[in-house]
Image (cartoon, rainbow, N blue to C red):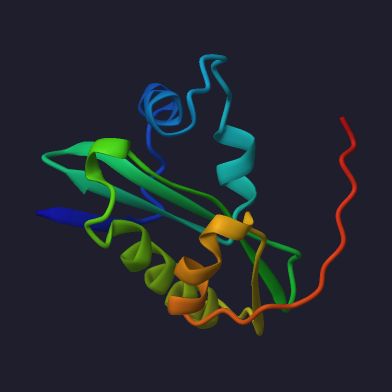
Length: 128
């Protein structure tokens, strides 16, 4: 059974382990600054272990943004990401956001559409 927790503030080690498994990122990151400024974040736990994560960043007003949606590859295709996006949508609404944005790669279009997002035009500049 996978449990979702709102704002669980996982340990740096737990997040870095998930990042390694989900993204292949071997360089440790410090997530404390990001999580302290988030509107919300969702953690998915199986047997007490972090197996999924999603961050909801925001502009302090009407706009919130889903970032860093990830699930341990061994736990994918079980509906965990969908449950996290739905929970993030509900929490963002409850906490006052009027719009919820998400950027994604083309292969994720059907996933985010199934979660209720519609296609929009957007712009992007890579800074580094």
